[in-house]
Image 1 (cartoon, rainbow, N blue to C red):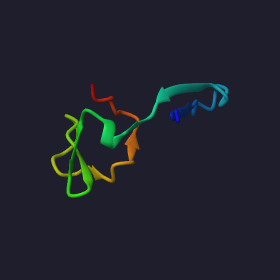
Image 2: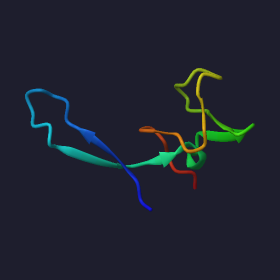
Image 3: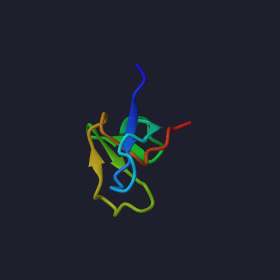
Length: 67
């Protein structure tokens, strides 16, 4: 199954029907995450240490697929 994040245009001067597709990356598949104790800890450079831990199926718009 393919999943995607849909971003709607929030500018009130523009049409809200403009949609930008972006691939949805789950934390368990993200290059910034590592699994421990049933959670995925985020190591993105701009996240404070220890401030981002998620369940494996969580996602964010900034995820990058692990290669």
